[in-house]
Amino acid sequence: MVLGLSVVAIIIYNAFKFLYHLFFGKVEKALGGYEEGWYGKGSKPKEGAEDASIHPFKISIPGEVLLDLKERLQRARYEPSLEDSKFEYGFNSDYLKSVIEYWEKEYNWRKQEEQLNKFSHFKTRIEGIDVHFVHVKPSIPEGRQLKMLPLLVVHGWPGSFYEFYKLIPLLTTPNPEQDFVFEVICPSIPGYGFSSSPCKKGFDARAASRLFLTLMERLGHNHFYVQGGDWGSLIVTILGKYYPSRIIGVHVNMYASGPKSWDIFKAIAIAYFPSLVSPAEYKGLFPFWERFKTILQETGYFHIQATKPDTMGSGLADSPVGLAAYILEKFSTWTNLKNRLSENGNLTENFTLDELLTNVMIYWVNNNVTSSVRFYKENGLNRTHEKIPLNVPFGFSFFPNELVALPCCLMGRSVTQLMSYTIMPRGGHFAAFEEPQLLADDIWNFVSLVQKMK
Image (cartoon, rainbow, N blue to C red):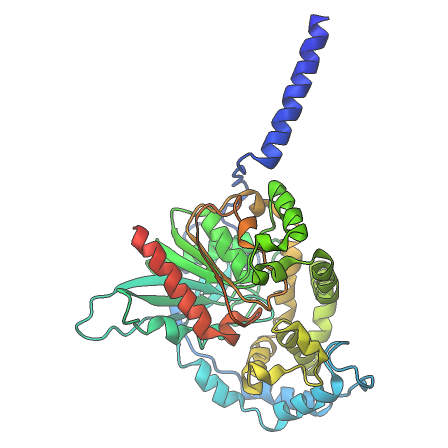
């Protein structure tokens, strides 16, 4: 009898313990499997054999690549759009014809290449990958004593390092109200831009964060700030989680972690009582059914890229027209879902065609769209990082047209030092590209708050 009661007591105790940790317990930190990898061709060289030097790099695409592109654009064929379909079925092919005609006859890559080279570019080999990055130091006016704070900024898909070109000058130009200024390091994720592509399976956001930490160390920065959107937000958040002693603060414009167990009950409460959060925050996640429909409508690409990236990549790598339609449709819809109801997707409302095509060209001339979408499969359903709390200062820019965004109150268990949560008056997914001034102002504000704590 006593034994039976003891067994029952143990079962009840363990059940209570499980429920307590599920809803209220601290998230455990699991750092296993975070050792250095090798993603170059062949076997990893002996220790010390890899060249760790940093080399200047200049973008200069061979003329035959541009000639081949022109010939492919001239041979393009199109499926006619449905009448009055606008952008509801994807990129409207009637409008696509005019975009491709501009690309073929008016767009000047050499002019854009010159613009891309206005900042200093470099490469360095890390774990078998040639990592490309832009490095911009500020010009400090004579007589001013300013702290130079290193800031790593990371892009996502289908963007590139080019997304930050309008943001960088806003961060490297001294602010008269601050006693610091930024030194900006902007890498291309391996498999994107002018970084080489991984040759082996397993290169995910954790591996990217490790490479970028090594990059910053080679530049002499053992402590630095980080900022990112899309995949970049996940990479920089992981940096903050796994290397909290190195990261001074994390700022993102897309939150890459879902709500924890107890937060789900908060979300349900908000669904029934919208006044618990601001109207803008409510719109970012609610009503649930509307958000769910949006996810169904806008994330088909994610499932394909996370399962069969090489199949779809084969078509995009062979057709510049297909590549442009696939990428530019995201710059329409992800800027504002209402753009689906426009004949031209309102593409040039926030960007110029030159800007949009330059981003497409970065994928085309490097022939790496397939490697870029493999990043979805490599990250897959591995959400181990979500079990780890972010214990460094955190800032969030809430742009109202982002596809999904968490209200401030649902970040509590995964973010322990929420320093700023700024609801922006406008803007969508490509914040640095769309609204560089708004994003820059928020980064300045966030870093200022963190600096005052030191």
